[in-house]
Image (cartoon, rainbow, N blue to C red; front, side, top):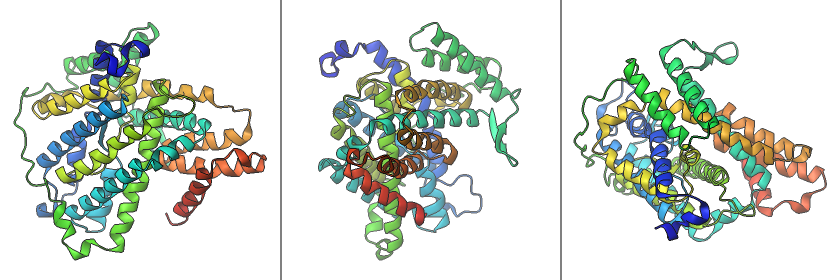
Length: 441
């Protein structure tokens, strides 16, 4: 295993990879609770139970799909990148497709499966890898920094430090609230350890924060350690019933499939590039094993749709694991193992609350912002698309939208500067695609 993952070459160890993989799991474990709540439309009171997805079945589907994706990424891609049903895509699935359009969740799963098949075919042909490698190095660094700002904003927002403000959109929350104070404590203890050079400081920071939260009664003690695994029958294989329904084959479903394709492609590509940059795995502006790594989300998406969950994609929370020392796909295998174990130890996940994960996201955002130093800000034709890519992500709450804006401005500034020959033809294609996307959005 050491030779397969080149531990000595990359300067890592089993302990380092294990801690990194565990940290990644803890940082993204919330999806095991949030995804079932979202897909079952738990927040919608006046909605027929017969039209809801089963909470327990979706929980099992989420854990297994996450494990499958992370295993494929670990074994084939060799990247310390974990996968799970994507936030944003699950909301689109539940609130836009099922609730808003009145489309049965079985049909929505069918759209997810078709998008996964398309991704799989695009990956086998090498098209996805060519697209990622065609992205200019400056924009790749901007994507990494932008995602850093994005996840920092998510952490600050989730902890209540930053809140909605009707006058200024956002503002400072009540920092004396228990949630905010616990988050601030987590930030301080993690910063102190990282400044002192403590390895796996992000992981230890999360553990100490959780312990302090339980001591002061802000985090409830788990009521039990081991629980029964819910029944997956209500959702398993339900996707195939959609294909036999004539109403499934409509232009409306085509638009839904394309939306899943678009958002997943650029969220996944942006996350893969950002985490690879952070881990120091990029070589000559290219991703080694990119083709194999890109198979992970398509395989996991297809498997997840059959099991009963929305699109599975790469998770930026993997950067927390990288910050704790993860450098290889072995960390992804550890994360996958944690997802499998979570089926039996779900009650323990109750201690991994927002104040515990928020400090990790904020600290990791700081680390990812270091990519800004790799951008030549003195060249205005580079600075414009890079800055707009970076700033648009947190402001629009979308990685894909940030990438789209940057991809539109890059050809414009480069052409005006007289550097048109340096632009990869693929970038012109995406310039046109994103323009059309915004025109009809």
